[in-house]
Length: 460
Image 1 (cartoon, rainbow, N blue to C red):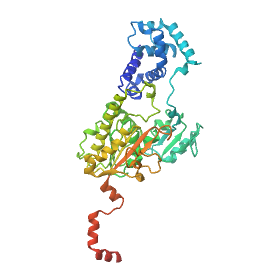
Image 2: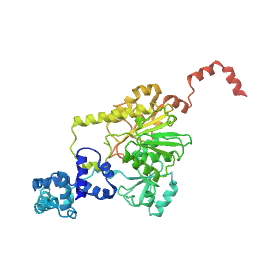
Image 3: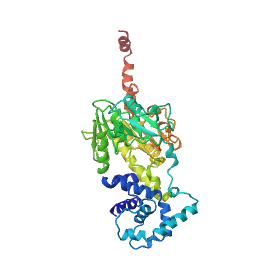
Image 4: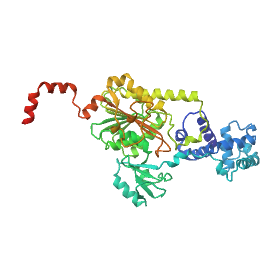
């Protein structure tokens, strides 16, 4: 029965909004995780129907049943599973006494809704998720793209111009190097290359930040991934750096830090230094980080752009709008704080800020506020132009929210074959001039004062 108590406790925590489905399941003891996850997810799929059945059967009148969520998991296994998998006890007997009526109410509910099968009582996932291919990034820290293609061919896969319904066909992405597209239903969790860290499952939009940051592949390069767990973006940055230089990957949560460390190790990222600390507590003047020039910021956000996550199983009713607005304002304030902190690093030249949100309050408005802050003025930070931020990508920012909307990137779920996403890039203006080959004004004036010297030197 402890197994059912664990599952009901997870449902209690979800009701209290103490985490996402994926996050709470990930925190469960490994020995119980798979079984508990299956029961929690399946119970959530049928939760609305099961609640109706439980209410109609008056099950909660049983004094032994003090928790609705405990009743849910027990009734799920009784009616939809292989029976309650526990020894005889007062709780199990309390539910079994109502077995006939519970089953009768289930059949009545199906008849009332005109359904032929019990499976039709389950909640359907977001239809937009079915339009997103299975994206697989080749981890070039461990092997080459050509070696990966040879491996896939040996597994019976064939490369096409575009992804199709053929389960053994795949295509190369047109925007992200080393990214492959497979049909949505393609499974890789048992694939040897995936288990070895050579193939990484990562949504296309999630690959944008590292590509835009374009960290240098040099021995002296110093880069920060400010909120690194679970590690997809970290391993991508490491690969782009050619496993050279130093990549500091921050994660303040201990359990998520463990996940990050494991993924970094499995992906063969020898230039990554995982740090179990809050990025906001880092002193920009600390000698260890003072030479950092590139920072990736992908802070906590509403996650409103993720359509293929399990949280569609939670309450479908909209949260109280006032509470939701307050939550978004708090997130935006935190996101702005992260950007301002990143701008304080003395040698900072490039900052990429991204979210998996579709809300302007977390995206364009945060960028506008960041550009107006004291740190941006002192550090001469501006937005990088479109030519530096995935110029071939068609969907840009909201012009009604910011003048330079063309400088930022958006992804729209249901239309762009990705989850919802936002990417922006801040660059230090003085460094941008040097990179573009622009001569500083003082230097120009000096050259104008000595025109003869310039002529003489050019004729020799």
